[in-house]
Amino acid sequence: MAALVAVSLITGGGYTWTDVLTTEGDGALVLAASRVPRTLALLLSGAGLAVSGILMQMIARNRFVEPSTAGTVESASLGILLTLLLMPGAPVVVRMLVAALVALAGSALFLVLLGRLPLGSALMVPLVGIMLGGIFDAVTSFLAYRFDLLQSLGAFGSGDFSIVLRGRYEFLWVIAGLVAAAYATAARFTILGMGEAVAVGVGLDYRRLIIFGLVIVSVVTAAVVVTVGAVPFVGLIVPNVVSLLLGDDLRRSLPFVAVGGALLVLASDVAGRLVIAPYEIPVGTIMGVVGSLGFLTLIFGRRGHAA
Image 1 (cartoon, rainbow, N blue to C red):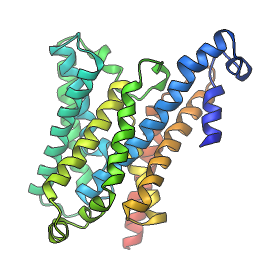
Image 2 (image 1 turned 120 degrees about the horizontal axis):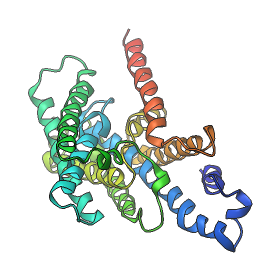
Image 3 (image 1 turned 45 degrees about the vertical axis):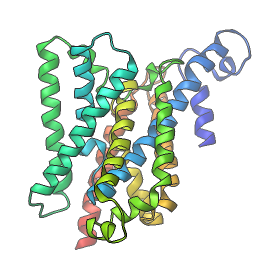
Image 4 (image 1 turned 180 degrees about the vertical axis):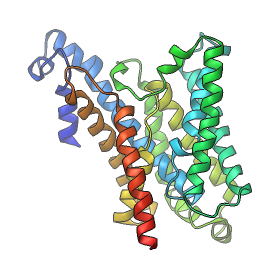
């Protein structure tokens, strides 16, 4: 992580590493106003999305679930559009809160559908989430087209950290507090992943814990989407890799999930800056490719193990 952070701070168009490491001139300003905030935003977003993924997997009891396969990201985007329509001059914090509320409603609807539909395969769970997300996305696109907001909505479609500047990312620090809250209750979420009967049997308030987890997931997702846009599949790949290595005890694995998510997003951003330098590929685009391949690997790996 230290090596990637160093590379992130000195990599970018227009200024060399000697420019940004100087204590005077424009290079120092670029480092303080752009490179440092961008790197911190990458670390916070990656950690938060990875932790959100493993919480969703424990709540839904399915390894293929995360915010981008449960309709959470798409419902957060719908919430942002609603603020643009109803409160066009609203500050960022209001947009984040509305997006979090709509994301919470969308995630809750996903869980309700899981409880009502006959699911014969573990792969049906993310399929339901993807279809639900498609409905949210269709409604969002229709409203954006109807009110000529497609261009404004496009800014939230793909995670792009090149727009991060000092003063425009600070709401992401709420993720640090939410990750800490998730770690403080990690043992309870481990039990939650064993099912309602086990959780109730040991005295946990099953529904309240689910709501608490969904609130964490929704606020983290909303904060990331409002600040930089959607970054898919982080919460799918990292928790599954960590689970294979360390098991399902969240008290042990959650710190590694957070660090792994931060590393993955940071590495994707650095790669995006280097592949076609001095131009950039957004992190959301890179994670879309990497995450899709990882998703397919998990699916075929699961089938191969079952066979």
